[in-house]
Length: 456
Picture (cartoon, rainbow, N blue to C red):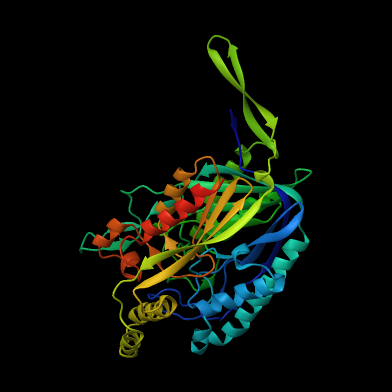
């Protein structure tokens, strides 16, 4: 009987670059905002790459985590990801372009070039393309023998944000103190052969919406202070991986005070450090050592060297398709007409999002969604572009309890919410924003459950 941390043994490399945009760039991310452009920088935005490769070579896995919000169009996202794929001449299943989902980031839609501050966007997107391709190459070139091990912890930063409106028959998007929230925190620790840290990974589900319409500063939200807190202790780069956070956000959010964003980040950072500290030393298991008779019969455990297997050294990747049903949707022509006849800025923002979403999913009865599945040693990583509710991760982790399982939203694109079937009985943003019918989340869970449980 042993505990284990689902290790991977192979080659590991990292690279990082600054992707802070120029002050004055278009950054209207909130319909309630009164301004269109950024007026300063709270904390720099970064792009961090992690490269994994089997010891005997072979095609690598590349994971990039960027301090950005969400893609408005398929074309903008693909231009950046294709630059990585083309530079490395690598299969699409082996690259993940993940956004940490800050809501205080710059505009990253080329169609907004005509907006105030939009003249910065084309050059900024070109900078993103070049930077991501560069750090992907650099991470792979820096790879050295090492181990990636995992440990679970807890953090109370995330709270349920589906609050029944006390004054109307609808559900508001804000803290609901009467509903529980998934507090699972997964830590990845990459070390070299001498046990020195190469990188840490933090997988946690919580919307970065501390800073809202009152704020005009570019910011990674709580992710910045979280990263600073961890890296001050570890002296190694930290990648944040946004989990299935469709209904999760900090208790204190929708503010303009950057100190609150930093405090939220330290809450998560200290929880991650606690989980990191609790992990056994690299390449070590905790194994049962038998009973000791004392005043009570005592069970004893001891540290033992981890025994690698073929699974420990393996990397696999694949793309998991699943078909979602679309609601009866307005046509592109109808939405364009509404946009042309609406002056309320918050309604214009909703219609712009609807228009771009329609272009992404099409006007047919079905849409084939895709998720990316990686096996990293004995651990699993599932990433997809939707904003799934946390049930996606809680049910999948329950299905494979003996494996460390990373679940990620906003990866290789951005589309719409996947809310539980029962939420479709309510008037709420995550339901009416989504083009998918009730049952969409359950379809995704079923498809990914089949993939995860079929692996040897």
